[in-house]
Length: 379
Image (tube, rainbow, N blue to C red; front, side, top):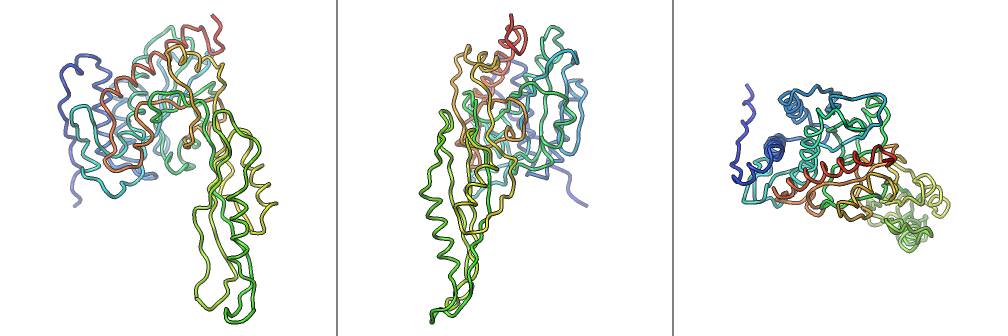
């Protein structure tokens, strides 16, 4: 018989923080439980159950499809436009070098250590706390949907994309990721391309064959030195890198095939399809894109949501890292507590003070938007 799952160990919180905000306490307690529940991409069943329990404890009706869990505010109305609050509860697997147990949710003064604490458990629980804050408010000029989704770390098809058609029409989204509470108003896209140069095998001792490695190297050299003309003021140039290469099986045989992988980070000036077509015309190797769907995404500087953030003194920037924004066919910005540099690292952590600031920032951002009247910013 399998052993029962380890019971949650509640770590004591500093008294002054407990007294500041009940939402903060709920958020930290929930984050501790999420950390102690492994949730690798495609294996998020248990954290989905934790989230279901959280909604049930708040008496908030929720829905679940696959490992995605979402809820609507109490006074949701079809007459109002809808803001999506979204973050993910899957994690990568722990890297080597952890000095602490990645699943123990260890508190040390202001630091909460654990896998997924920063990416993206902290932003997720802050969004959830903010949603609870607004849940019963009748006078909101917009709707809120909170969605805790799966498979973000692998841009999987059973994550946010799996439930978008069930959420209804979305006007704008806040995507919870660690941004140091700066506004990421643009995000680079991603396209992974498999390349294969074709040659002809022969004996290496004689002038035989066509070496596929040399064909691939010419293409790789072009890729390394080419600069795309259009440069984004927020995201900079398109970045393209060859990150893997494989060829040959014996030292005395001229290889007839050389495979390589291209990692391309697109800006909003190009679609992934446009970039792929251009690359294929410039190279001899056969290219095949794994997907075109992860395009650059963002939101206009004059959007009311951005203006609400600017009124709070938040800074804007363009993010080089990918999130589920890439799968959203509507305006979105990325915002959350924590630091992107801590993601996917040993002894990942988030600060309790960052969680508190995250909740306050989300609430203030949405309240500022509510004071504008509606999502067009009319008074």
